[in-house]
Image 1: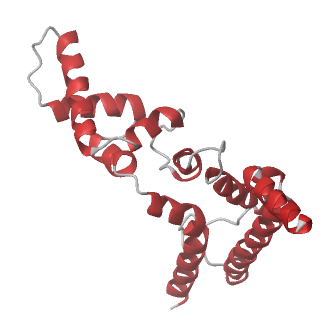
Image 2: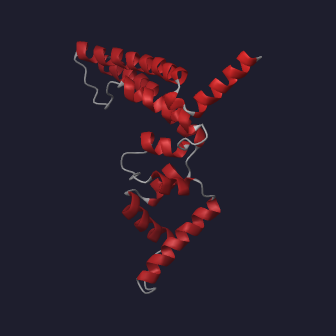
Image 3: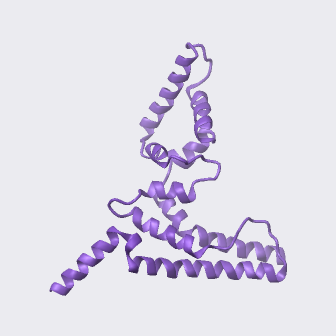
Amino acid sequence: MMDKLKRVRQAKHELTNPHDSEQVQAVAEVLAEIERAQRAAVMDQRDTLDLDPADGVERIDKDRRKAEMVDLVDAYTPGGQSLVDVWLDKCAPADLDAEDPTQLAHYVEMSGEEWEQQISRWADTYRAQAGGSLDATDRDLADLHVEGQWGVTLDRFEMEVVQWDRRQALRDLLAAPSEATEQAIEANTEVLA
């Protein structure tokens, strides 16, 4: 009984501190190595056959990928980063200025009604600063604000941040490297055909 209780405490500690957990680190390392080896095989094929499909796919850094997986586990533990923060750090589109993930996470958590109110507040602020003389829709003014603040259009911000989906984020974090490897294989095949 004491041995079982000790194992339960150890498992709880490891899940609470995945960056310090030998088991979590070991699993992440194995998975990262599988992804690295698969991608390396595709890239080696390209090198051997002198293929250049210009798809931007690169070799996987095993240590970086391992750290990403541990960060993902950490996102599901008390006291760890949120899944939103991990996704913003690892997967946010390059053109989205995600330097302050906490600020962006605020918009992820908004309901549709709260988001519409936010658009109205931004528009009201712009109109007040212009002395009420701006002839533009709330969305036009919010678009101006979002582009200035985060470097993307309002529509793109809504698609990437406001309509953020937990399942899709998890898929992005877990499956994106394997999907990119699969697409690289298809690109190699297309170049060879």
